[in-house]
Every structure is written in structure tokens, then in C-alpha cells.
Image 1 (cartoon, protein in one colour):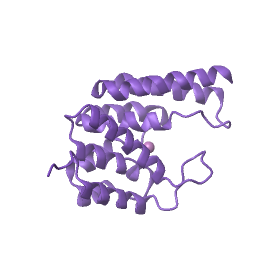
Image 2 (cartoon, protein in one colour):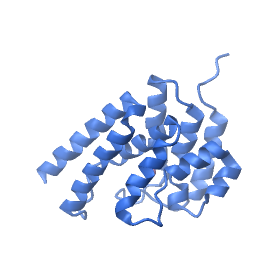
Image 3 (cartoon, helix red, strand yellow):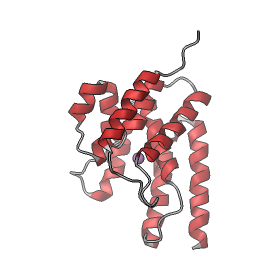
Image 4 (cartoon, helix red, strand yellow):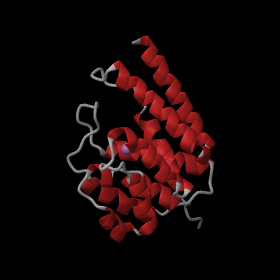
Length: 185
Ligand code: NI
């Protein structure tokens, strides 16, 4: 019997860990849908890329996708991720987390540099995260903030797009749709 390219058991363990860590959190702008939806969509983008462009470590990519916000957005620490999932996953998730000790304007560039030092499986997660988040912005955002978000997406694509032609094309299309939406406002 063929085995799948990634481990269903590792997926289940990471999904369960993320579900508990993000319990009660919701996706901004969705009127209360569970945060797990964001994690599932990011993981789906990553799995799509792995299906069409095999070669990166699928278990590392999938676990990092499901866990990518646990350090930044919950009480979970790097040490806890390390104890449950090992060094590669813990370091990947840490790189995907902005450093709250830095000035806000420096956090994205710092995180991108740390992601670039990780295996490309981790790069896929950041691309997938921004593809998932590039929806029409909330009405409460200022024109300045909307434009900054678009420019930031361009910087992510420039820094990490080399990891996946498939995700790069999806991200480029999302950036163009976002820009077209802003032009209509
Ligand atoms: Ni995210």
C-alpha cells in the first residue's frame, strides 16, 4: 500500500495542539469564526504547493503551518513547541513569529530574515499565511494602513517567492486583486 507524502498522525497532533492553544480565538473580520479556520486554510495552501512541487519536507511544512501562530498569539512558548514537536518545528515556528521586543516597523524585516535562514518548507508557510490573509481589508483600516499591507505583501513575495513558483503565482494574483480593490475605494 502506498503511504501518503506526509504523516496523518503528525497532522492530527499539531492540529489538536493548535486547537487547544487558540481555543476561544476568532478570525478578525469574520464575525466570530474560529481561529482554526485560518490555520486550516494556511495548511491547505501549503499542502497544495507540496502536491504540485514535491521536494520540501512535507511534515515540517504542515506542522509549521498548523502551529505558525502559537508562539506569537498564545501563551505557548518555544520550549513547549520544542518538547512536543522537536527542534526543526520549534525553530520554524519561532522564525514565523514576530519579535515583540523590536519596534513595530522592524518586526517584519526581522522575521523575514529569520525565515530565510530556515528550510524552504518554512518559507512556504509565510507565503501561504499572507495569501490567506490578503482579503479585502476591513473598513476600519486607514488608506495608509491598507497601502502598507499591500507593500508588505510585495516584500514577503520578493524575499520568499523563490521557495515556490506555485505559491508565488497565487500570491501575485492576490496582491493584484487587493490592489484593484483598493483602487475602487
Ligand atoms: Ni497566520
